[in-house]
Length: 321
Length: 273
Image (cartoon, rainbow over all chains, first blue to last red; front, side):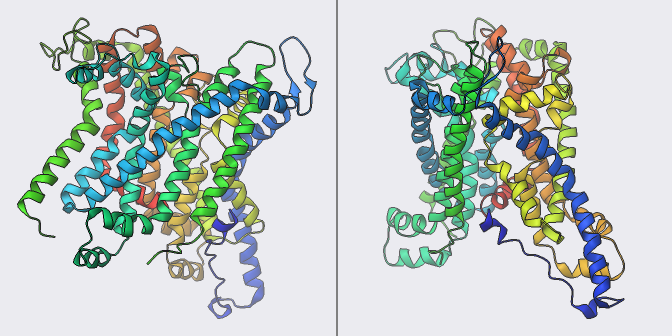
């Protein structure tokens, strides 16, 4: 955040002679007025964030040190729940599922997006804008709709098994087979998100000076040589950004498996957030404290990753140009 | 760039293939809505319906709960969009243009929520809105999410690019900051407002978990919540479900098509630029 801060281009105070009434007092009076105006302007945001973000966060931290159940008074237990979470195999299993999902979706999504963006870049203006809208289309579809739609396509008699039958395969029971369920959830995950990735990569590609490619072509470099020698190194920052943000988002995945599989079969699609969400609704005693603590532990992990993002994004464009 | 004939053909084939594979799920959803109960998952497989029937679409349009959910969600989404633009734009202007005591602290304060995962505060946010008596009101869907760090940051970046000279001229003429904000900044904010407004609208329209937690009143059921319930209650009526999903997606797809230029360029600005 401090790095972001440094980008605040503070408007310089006007030179004293620009002040009609001149003198320091007028400037001080204006500063006072600006102060009041600024606080009035940020007040709604500050208050809303205080009530609906910071207070709940503080409360989560506070409550995670108590044993809460319907039958007894809350009892202070310190960091006990943190230990329980760390020792819970299901918590770690859900993290493994989350990592597996991220590995399935993030690199695939970026590769697809990079190929698409390189292709769109070669098109004429009109075709390019058509393609941009087309690839972005799934991004406006809701996760609920995508989940229901893909469950429908994954049915035994559904369109995906029909396509497989053309290749003399299947039918595969996609969502009920533990080894296929997570990849089956990953497909709509990629479908929903690759459009945004493509447009970001396209913006990055358009920033690379065209003459780099021209001289490479004169030297006889083929498509893949240009890709690996020019495009990828020059897009390093963008790719890192997409990789890390994609990763944090993927680990937080939750609505798709909630609607498509509710975590099954045998927890094969129970991502960390789904695990936490389902333990909120669990009726066993202390489930509340447990899931609160688990969500905070995940927050620590994600916070660390987010810090890495900002370090990377602001690590300056060492290779640019 | 001039291209040879094989290159043109190759491009055309590729464009067709990509368009087909991206749009296939959506097209399949719409087509399946035209199929009857016995047709929709019939074996042997059939791509198009025997007869294009409107039964599913007319049935879902005649369902008062569906229409109510669409209506309530449109109203909520519009209010949400207006409120979040107001709150975030005010803060964005202050952070872009004003010097004030404690600016650095409040800047970090307003940006930190970008890094707090929703799940870490889901349950305790629920406790807050329940203590405030907001459950089962439209307010619970609108107010808690209105302040958005990302949106404020985006608009602030845009305001940083405004020439300072105009503002100083107005100050010399004795205008207050509020007047400058309203007369100089707001009229030129159409582009970021469209991009961020649509993002807010989409976020509200597509929300699922928060409405499920906070709304039980059938009169306030949100559209995605309606679809979710529909799926668990009548999961096997796929034709009807696909028709409903198609209709529930039309407003967002329509927004994309209308504002395509803004949105597609907006991704570029909101990316890492």
